[in-house]
Amino acid sequence: MKSALVIFTVLTSLSLWFAAQDPAPAVCRGKVLPIALLPGPKMTGPSLRLRFGGTRDVPRPPINMFRTDNAFRLVIKTNDEFNEFWKRFTAPIPPQNGIPPPPEIDFSKEMVIVAAMGQRPTSGYWVVIDGACEVDGQVEVFVTSVEKPTCPGWGVFTSLTYPADAVRIPRTDLPIVFREIHISCEQWHNQFKNQ
Image 1: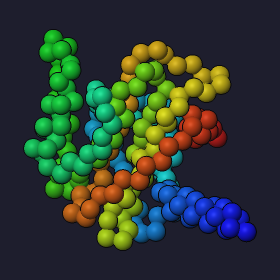
Image 2: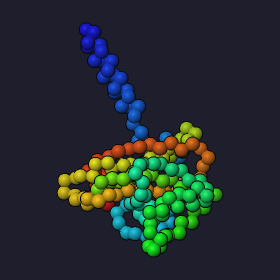
Image 3: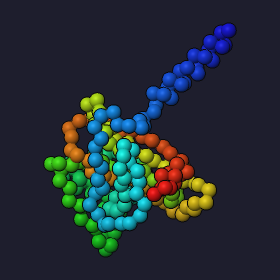
Image 4: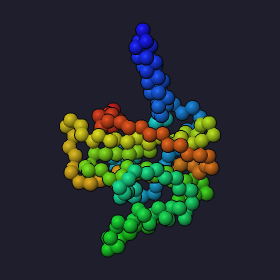
């Protein structure tokens, strides 16, 4: 009887813990915030579905890779902060290759959110900012990561990669909370079906 009670308590605790860990609501319980990419070269390709409706392009230049060993999330609200970030971003670029100027951002109306995954051993890893919601006195920013790139029928390249994403959202002084979602490569590829 005592062991049954312990097992019941453990299972109940685990199910409550897993329920509390769901950081990815299917709907925004507040105000959906628009997401825009940083100004950069126009590219064609499939669109990604945003968490609360709409689509966006896949991560693209200027910031679809950020050379760093460790993952980070960053909220940039001023030109000075963005210029400092841009220096870090362009530091690995040899000067003879031409260092791109930072894109123009109107920080009186927008702020920049950056998600970088850090160094990975192959291609096929992705990090995407795919939702923003103002709710309960904060802004929740949803970041989806593809951590296991090996899918049946999909090849990867053996080379170091540094997946990253950067978007613009409306400026706010509310606290920013990142909601992290990890998906398999199968789930990632399924997002492109039926488009």
